Image (cartoon, rainbow over all chains, first blue to last red; front, side):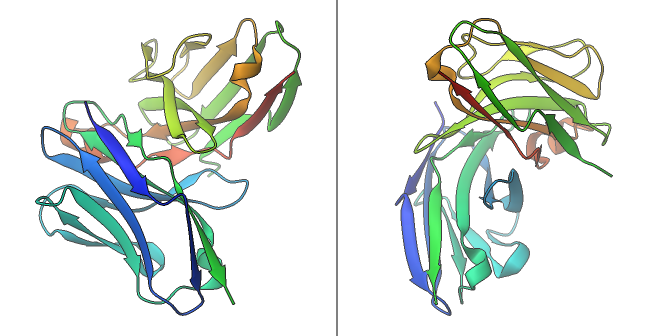
Length: 114
Length: 118
């Protein structure tokens, strides 16, 4: 069965510091991988996705993620955190034969200190 | 373009009461989903639909029913609410198109319905 594990339910960084949010997945077939962001009192928005091809994926707001098959990881990074990045981030996985259904990780809340 | 609209935004129910959550999308999406979000558990799929007139169970379907009578609407019903159903409910939709794009099309989410069952 597929699963997604996000390491760390809360991550706190200083403004301007590197953001690293960790995501590991388990899947018996090549997965499609996603990162979503949720701002307070809103629904989730797509940050970026990996399907096939280049393993380094760039998303919105300066975020990027690298698919590492050998490590079954899809960590999210941003070189320099901004106060507006404070939100909850969700990693998700789907399989090609599951018609768009996503399995979500438990989420990581990112705090950015001034 | 409103995207995905959920009504109501908030609701308080007493145990045993029933209610229906409405989701409407104006993007002509084939696929629609209902998720619940609970602290520390991420989002869990309740039910989904791959087209008008179709529904299917997700990870946590017990205690819920759904209907997709019109392509643009996806209703989630609670027949007899329980405190364990206190949660934030999100509706989402996605484009289907070819089988490949349906598998990696992004989900478009509504802003959620916060339900409390006392």
